[in-house]
Image 1 (cartoon, helix red, strand yellow):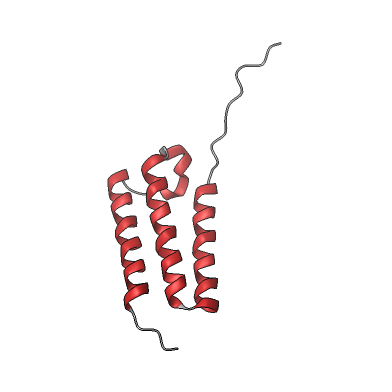
Image 2 (cartoon, one colour):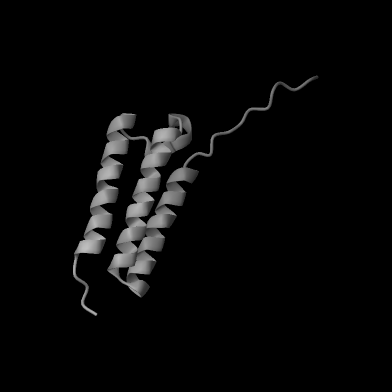
Length: 94
């Protein structure tokens, strides 16, 4: 018996897990290096999420795909710009 073509399994929620790990890294950086570093990393994580949502198909994006693609990308980019801007603008008491 010959086996059929091997099916490639989608990564499930691996994309979401990687992005949550990035948010966790931002939290750790906020604790040790200050809110500016944590905010910038969180903004970069959200920007990466926007790019991934833009380029990945829905079956691979997993739980990252919530609404339509343009709405998801727009919301993630707005949040990324907001987090990064606030990280640079807010005063930090040294």
